[in-house]
Image 1 (cartoon, rainbow, N blue to C red):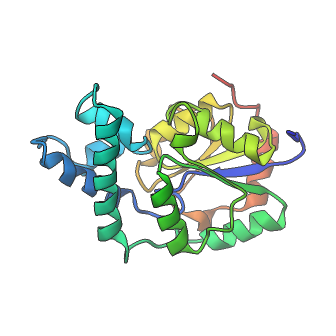
Image 2: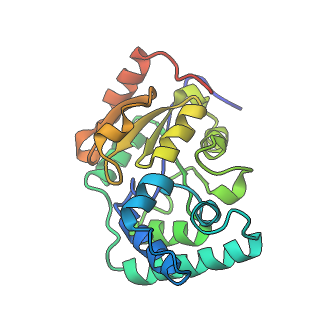
Image 3: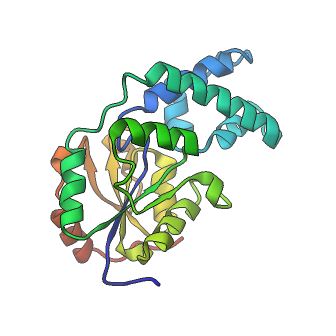
Amino acid sequence: MLNNERHAFIFDMDGVLTDNMRFHANSWVQLFRDFGLEGLDAERYLVETAGMKGHDVLRYFLDPNISEAEAGRLTELKDFLYRVTSRDLIKPMPGLEGFLDAAEAQQILLGIGTGAGPKNIDYVLGILNLSEKFQAIVNPFQVPRGKPHPDIFLRAAELLGVFPSGCIVFEDALPGVEAAQKAGMHCVAVTTTNSAEAFSSFENIVQVIDDFTQLRPDDLLEKLSRREPATLI
């Protein structure tokens, strides 16, 4: 049952809990080079498709008519390359552990809404030792549509039992911020993948941060209480 007196923080994972999006980007670039796609570099991937699930990235850059089976095979190849090359590089964002502890102390529910698949979720949360920290974890294979559609965040809010208006999303990618806006949720933008200016067109941004040392849960809730509810679009 939804509770309009509770609040939830819903985090994208890659680029938010850890600054790892460039590792993903480099793995996609290497994969696409095998297909002769030389015009794609890490920056283009990060700006245009960061936050999307792998199948959608392949449809966007490689083949809009790629089969589910082939998309799944290539996504797994890319993800294997990503895990092999990043294993010793995954670190928590500065201030993350303290921020999560402070949110828990204020009885704020914690969830994840990510474009990553189950293997990558287990991989990152295991390295960060955060596997037990979140009450709901939603990946794109659990909903009809991935980001920039709102399905992932709406499902996370449903599992947490919190109305969308009581949720704040933490996102680094433009499709993710768009998904939060479509879900009727306010958003904290993290500048690991995009500059602060890149988020200027979104009306649901409550704060732009470089990392979690710049943030306090109680300050966020106060800002939320002073703002109009985000418009569900």
